[in-house]
Amino acid sequence: EVQLEESGGGLVQPGRSLSLCCTASGFSFGDYGMSWFRQAPGKGPEWVAFVRSKHYGGAAEYAASVKGRFTVSRDDSKSITCLEMNSLKSEDTAVYHCVRDGRGYNFEYLDSWGRGTLVTVSS
Amino acid sequence: DIQMTQSPSAMSASVGDRVTVTCRASQGINNHLVWFQQKPGKVPQRLIYAASSLQTGVPSRFSGSGSGTEFTLTISRLQPEDFATYYCLQHNSYPLTFGGGTKVEVK
Image (cartoon, rainbow over all chains, first blue to last red; front, top):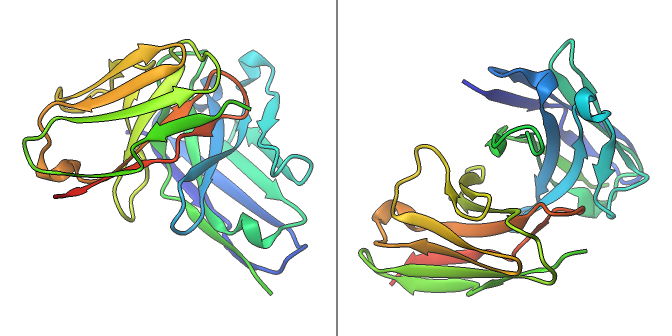
């Protein structure tokens, strides 16, 4: 069974940093890309970032709203992906989900979501 | 960025109704479209991928069609557990973008 568990959320002041991580199990983590999505209260989901598998170079993509502030990484030896968030703004307040993203590898993409971790940016 | 225009934004329907939700892409996205169902307090669940492929375990009353710029999600006979919000997502190019959602409510 695929399992994704996020950690690291919390209350943070505007301008500060926070790091989220997602621990994966139940699948061959290194073969898959991983995406981060977020959902602000009462809003629809929003894609945030994607990190390719090492097979595809491991490069990352970002939404314009977070580019230059957020960095996604992965550690295949630990089956973990992390999202480092800097210069946080109030509009970054949301539940953040990691999502298995096997696009380009197989049909198992965007099919498994973690429960998410809440990030609240407020003074 | 590719804009996804989803309609309607909300609808009222009864059990047994046929429900159709449409997503229009601002430019061609081949079949790189996913449909999600989301219930309150839950994470989005993938229903359809590659525009028309049914996710394993999803009832066959759900179907997807379309390619290029016009896509449709159809629920052939609405069931009580289908009252939820539905989103389309294009993954043809970055940034990945969602439609605005369709809330299917009880009539």
